[in-house]
Image (cartoon, rainbow, N blue to C red; front, side, top):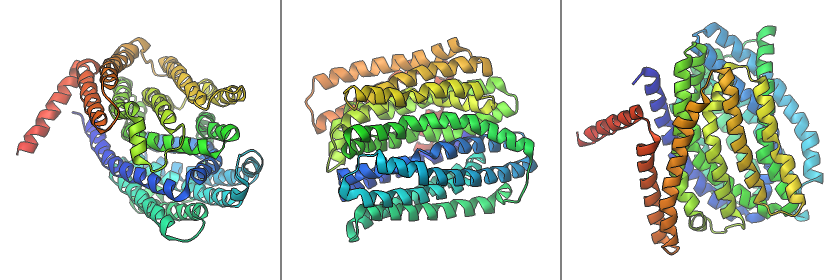
Length: 508
C-alpha cells in the first residue's frame, strides 16, 4: 500500500474513533434535550436556529475554498504561498462575518417575526434562541480557517479530540437543563454559545502554535484575492442551494405544519448526521489527497481514488443505515421517551437521500480540486435549488409533509448524473467505467440485501427479537454482497490481506 493510502487509512481510523464516541454521546444528548425542552420547544430551537444556519452558505463556501487552497499549496509544497493564502482568507472571513451579521439582524429577524409559526407565549424565548444562535455562528466562522488548516495538514487525531471535547461539553449542557431552574429553551441557547466559544479558543490556539501559516500578518495580493473570491463565489451558489434544501425546506415545513413537524424533522436529521459521519469522516481523510493528486498532475491516480472512494462512501453508509431503515420505528421508540409524529418516515426518507448523495461526495471533491467550477456550480446548484420552490408548490396544494423528502431524493439522483457529465470534460472521467465499476455494483448489493431482509421482516413479528435478527442479517448479507459483488479483484485481495494481518496480530 502506498504512503498516501496508508495515511488515508490512518486518518480514517482516527476519525472513526471520534465518530463512534461522538455519535453515542450526541444521540444520548438529543434524548435528554428533547425530554428537557419538550417537542414544541425542541422544534422551535431547530427552526429558529435554522434561520441563522440559512446564512451558512456564505461561510460554507469559504470553508470549501480554505481547504482547497491550503491542500493545493501543500500539494505543491509552497509554504510561503501558504502563509499568504491564510492571511488573505482570514481577511475574507472578517468581511463574510460582517455581511452575515448584517443579514441576520435584518432579513433573518424579518423571517423570525413575520413568517415563522411560533406560539405567542414562546416569542420571547425564540428571540433569545435567535440572537445566541447568531453569536454562536459568528464564533464558528472565526474557527473555519483554523479547522481547514488542521484538515489540510491531515492532523485527524487533533480534529478527532476537539470534536470529542465539543460533544462532551454539549452533554454537560443537556444535564444542566434538568438541574438549573431557568427557562430551558433560553438557557440551552446561552450554554451552546458558551460551548462554541470555548471550542473556538481551543482550535485557534492549537493551529496558531503548530502551523506557522496560521499566524496572521497583513498581506494583500489582488490576483490571489480574485482567485479566492472567484472560487468561493461559485461555491457560494452551490452552498446556498444546499442550505435551501435543508434549512429553507425546514422553514417551509414550519409555515405549513408548525413546530411539532420541525421537531420530527430535527430528530430525523440528528439520526442522519450521526450515520452520515461514517461517510463524512472518510471524505475528510480522502479529500486532501484528491486535491493534492490534482495539484501534482497525477490525474490517473486521482480518478482511481475518486472511483474507489465513491464506492466505499456508499458501502460504508449502506452497512450502517440498512438496519435503521428496516427497524426505524423500534430504534426511535426505544431511543426517545417522546416520539414526534412523522419522525420515523422522515428518518427513512432522509437516509435514502443521503445514500444517493454519498456517491456524489468524491465527485464534488474532484470538481472542486480543479478550481474550474463556474458552470458546474451554476447548473448543479440550480437543480438543487429547485428543492425550495417545488416543496412550497406541493405543500401549498395540500400534499403531506413527506413530499419534500421525496422531492429531495429525486433531485439527488438527477444531480449525481449531472456531476458525472461535468467531470467527463473537467478531468476526463469515464462515465461508462463509473456506471459499471461503482453504480452497478452498488445497485446489485442493494437488491440482494433488501430481498433477503424483506423476506425476514415479512415472516417475523415486531419486537426485540426481530430487531436483533434484522441487524445481524442486514450486516451479514450486506458485507457478503459487497465482498462478492461490490469489490474488484484488487480490492478483494487487499481486504483479504488486511484481515489476515489483523487476525495474526490478534493471535499474537
